[in-house]
Image (tube, rainbow, N blue to C red; front, side, top):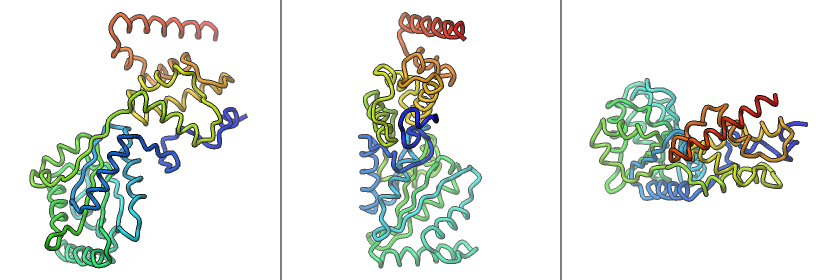
Length: 300
């Protein structure tokens, strides 16, 4: 019997691979998307979403792209994969994504091509939107100046291009490289870690989408997972998935707290929640975990 058959699931509930079916519209993600869409629909020019590792920035970027229908927007999503990107590459890539055919090798000619294309999009009654994921990779003044130049492509009273940056907190340092660009940020939103209540709803939602007919974790487990993960969705997925697999190997129908502690230990996460507890409580919990692991090892 497979992992999925054991729990009666249709698909893996906690994969970290992008999957629109598992998008969880938490309150803060809803608020973030609302603000970013407002920036685009109002032609604000530049909007920024900042969040820590694993807080759902890429998921939100993809969700926003899905919310930009072709009949109203000419949109694209670019992912910055390394810090060696050049202004020429950025300009050419944006031009291609927005529909410029055979971008010129000369920068001035390419800017003219892009401006002409933006005017065509405007005449069609649509808005041009470029989403930049992993924007903290844009680590040079020249790149920031390039984006400032792109935001200058406008007609009287109206900007022709909207740009949305998604990135780690280091993105703030990148923007600071060009003060005039930093001053043009019209909308900014900071993603934070999930609360325990939100994490519980999140886990239940993903289980439901995966086809679970019942809760697969004991009541005290998800608060533990939330604490070990620090409220970070990506880590919640990783811990939750490992917990299910470990319980499956032990032929258990539900994940208990012992399994959660063991998984946290395997993932080197035990010290994280313990260090956040009051000293006497932390020592007590540490003793409990160590005794439990000793008993498990003796049984093996």
